[in-house]
Image (cartoon, rainbow, N blue to C red):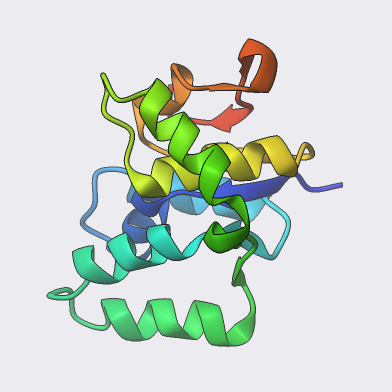
Length: 138
């Protein structure tokens, strides 16, 4: 059975940008994962922004959403308080809204790992100080 994952901004961008330093690593990891990948609106906002000047980047990202290969699996309005608590807890890093949403998603979706190139996810902890299951470059 293929592993299920929550995807961060970095791997979305690197998958769609063949010149990105993590492109090959990301493509290899994506081939190993179950579809759909889940994310949050904050990650999508970051990804669309970072891909805005990339040829076909925004259209490729739209297609991933339209086909259902990438889905939002989180409601910030329902999880605002836990996300804000996480952001306050990790304010020294600082934790972005997108990272806060993904950490909260990892608390809610116990069978999902976080696919990321962001080393902060090695420091973040779920409730009760449990490390987050990550898929991260060596």
